[in-house]
Image (cartoon, rainbow, N blue to C red):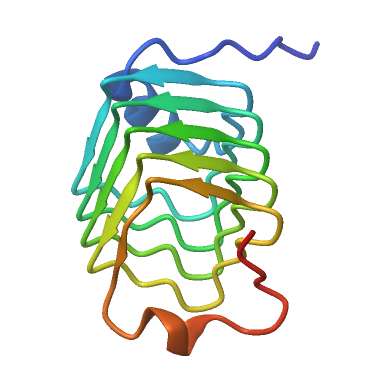
Length: 131
């Protein structure tokens, strides 16, 4: 019998479910969530909404953030290697000292976003068009 997906109601719940092997957190909503010192490699947040959330000292390598709305978020000292932000909206969301090697920003929209990341441009390839 297949169970129906239940959106996590807090970062704590997400951590517990991730630790048990769950990776599909599509269509989740997080407001003022603090994701700190977490390994979330391979997580799938497609079609999720984040407002005023903080990702600090986290790893989301090979993660999926396609079609997300990330408003007023802070990404600090985190690893987004090979993460897809395809068709996502990053409004007032800032990246500080993040690893962006292989990160895909194709069709992503940026408004008031700061990319203050060491060697950021070195990691972007032709396929990573920033709109």
